[in-house]
Length: 272
Image 1 (tube, rainbow, N blue to C red):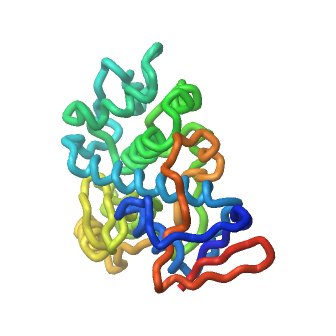
Image 2 (image 1 turned 135 degrees about the vertical axis):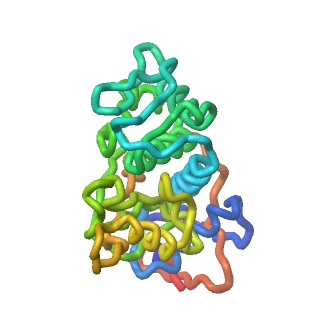
């Protein structure tokens, strides 16, 4: 369910839509969710939809790229943009705009290899770059480091308990009885793409059952506990990042006959 605290006076929601197909799917998921999502205004809702769609697209693009999976010891990067540190992380080179360095991962992907947590962080950074003002991105992330879950605080990554996830959310598959000789398979960080599909670096784009089967094949001998999807959701800070948004298409709530609209005071609710 969506709650918008303030709509312009006299607003008449439209049945036409400026949203892309992927964005409309995200709006539908928000409206259909049993979780209440509250926004101060339409613009905040529009930004989150755009950023979620860009997270999905960045995940698909990385899945199609030639970037490879590697544990930290064998990670690699394009030395024109990054310095590989002793831990296997990538530190932005002095004088390089972070926007150009992030884009290079997708342009010269064959020069990169990293593990699944770093892949998720890269997806988040690329999506934010595609959604906010470039100069703001370069200012916010001027000292960029790509290493595991070490992220800039302006990205606002946080994890919360929950089972109702949306396209663009990061979810974790835990493998409780992984083979200790291959600790990289103790779990898989993924991006939910919608339609029951997840992207995990090193595994690809698959339904939940396929990812669980892949992890189960990496268990220790005699293991009896299956891998499973943890009931937690990891996200960027949509609200904070929205202040740096690029201009978005004029937005009027694109309604569908299946949507139910309600009002309470100045707030408008969408659900079905």
